[in-house]
Length: 405
Image 1 (cartoon, rainbow, N blue to C red):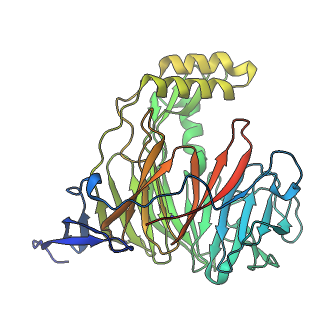
Image 2 (image 1 turned 135 degrees about the horizontal axis):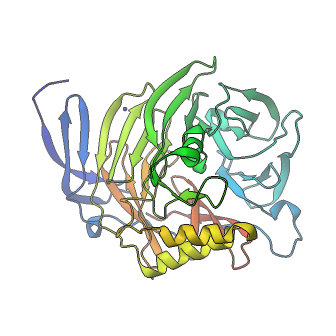
């Protein structure tokens, strides 16, 4: 889900969404030392065209009665719609890729747990590159099983060195983009801090790298992990975990660019695949307060995940947490099939939807999509959205929605 000294040129223009709706001419583009700055800060949310998802999905994959084994999902980590209209769901629990036709009928299942050709030890994510080639990402980073659009196994790959704490995604050109702190993984920095560091709160720094097919590694940019908080004493009652609503580096990509956002401010850097910043995209972001309900939900979740023997450590950790007044400037970023940037706001207590902002290929703010807060977006296409939904029993379903513009 990138130089002229001293001179600045600014222009205001009308932003057009892909559907042709016009936004007031309030976006400003200027040049600063060869980096284009697209400033959407003056565009109010009320002025944006609204793209919507219907209440009823066009298609649902999933079951509660166990009648269809292929639709019993456990830890869905990705899904994509192929050019043929077929759907592929990556199920992390079974390490399988499950293929469905455009009507939702199961066609075949590939992958599975094992060490043989096309089998996986783990399944962290699903990538799709040119020609609808599918890549099931295993561990360590760069270890993957490649399949064609019909599920025929092509080969296993192991790209790059083994670096603990890294997970990666394949770019459309087949190179691997790795982000040290994605999925809350961590390496020696946090371990050393936990064992003997002096800081109560620690934010590790890692690197975003691009690994080529010949295992050449290009370092693109420093990235920052979440803010971690520690209580207790090493080898006694120590407990470490990311702070609630912690700042974090968010990364996504398209065929030509990598997008990087630090959640302290409403801004995303656009880098080319060599790591050079070519554009800054900015927008306005109203602060979303951390409420009592937010704090209660976080604490309940932390305690629910705690093992019985560690519950007292978690209680001590929660007692020491100091909550910030407002949530970070944004929660997630991603891109759609056309390469446009999408930015997710934080949800507000009592509001059933949360806005995703849509930016054109040039960085201009184009639209907003109110999305129900219980949906996790898996893929955004030109006319559709794939989303993960869980019922009250935490059973997983993959839903297909028409995207109305």
